[in-house]
Length: 379
Ligand code: PLP
Image 1 (cartoon, helix red, strand yellow):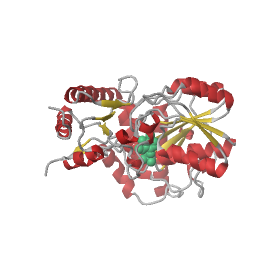
Image 2: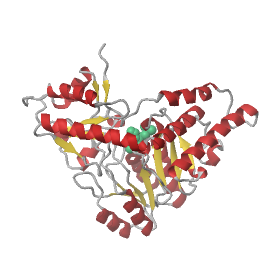
Image 3: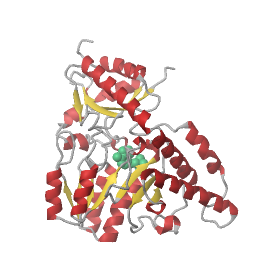
Image 4: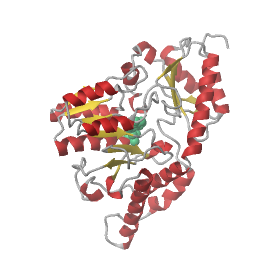
C-alpha cells in the first residue's frame, strides 16, 4: 500500500520513539506516586524531576507547574481558577482562540455571570492592541485570553506587548501556548504572563498530558485528592509526565534547527503553491516573523471539489485538515476564518497543512500533485 503523507502536525505530532522508550519503564511501573513506600517514592521522584526539567526550560519555578490531561484542561484550569480565586467579572478574549478557551468562557458567562468581550482582530487575525487597551481602560483587572499562535492559520500574537498592557491595567493574562511550546520560544521569566497552557502531543510527546504554568496558586479546577499540592486532584499520569519532560527538553535543545527546517518547508510550499495556482488565497499571517513556521492555511479558488477537497486529499493519501481537529466534527465552518472575515462558503474549502520532523520537500511535492488534480487551472 502507498504510504500516506501526514500533514497534520498541528493536530498532533507523531510520538518520538526516544520519548516512547523513555516512558516505557514508567508505564510498566507498579505503584501509586502518592504512596509512601519505596515504589511510590520512585514514581514521585520521577514526577518531581520532570517538573524541575520543564520549569527550568521555560524559566519558571517548579511549584508554578501543574500537570494536566492536556491543553484543554490547562485552559479550563486557568480560566475557571482565576474566576473562582479573584472574582473576575470581565474576560477580554481573542475571538480566534481554541474552543478549549471559547467554550470555557461561554460556561463562565452562563454559570458565574462573567461578562465576555471580544477583542477586535485584523484580517490576518492579529489582535488590535488599541482596542484591547480601550477595553482594559473600561474594565481594569479583567482576565485577558490571547493565544501565542493560532492553530488554524498560524498567526502569531504580540504576546509581550499584550502582557505589559494587561499588567499596566492590573489585569491577568492567560496565554495558550499549545502550538508554540515545541519551538522553544516560551520563556516566562521576563514575560508578565499569569498562565500558559501546553500539551505534549504537539511536541512529539504522548497524547493526554500537558501542563499549566501559573504565576500564583489558584483554586483547583478538579477536586479530590491532594495531588499536585492540592491544585489538581487525581493520580498522576507518570509515564506521560516523564515523556513530556523528555520531549520538551529535546525540543528546546534542537529548537534552532527545528524552526529553520519548518521555515524552509514553509517557504518552499508557499512558492510552489503560488506557482501552481495563480489565484491562491492564504489565510492568516504567512510571513516568517508573523506566522507559525509549521502551519499554512489556504484556499484554491479554482478548486472544483468545493468542501470535498479534504476527502479527495485523503483518498490520495494526504492527511490534512481544514479546521482544528477538535472542531472538525461540527457543522459550523471555522470560527477562526469567520473572525478574519472569510465568507463561510470559502471557509469550507480551506486547507490547513502543518508539518514537522520527517516532512521533506518530496512529501510536499506529492501533496502538490494531489492538489493539482482538483483544480481546473492548467498545470
Ligand atoms: N489550544 C490550542 C491552541 C490547540 O491547538 C489545542 C489542540 O489542538 C488545544 C488547546 C487543546 O489541547 P489538547 O488536545 O491537549 O486538549
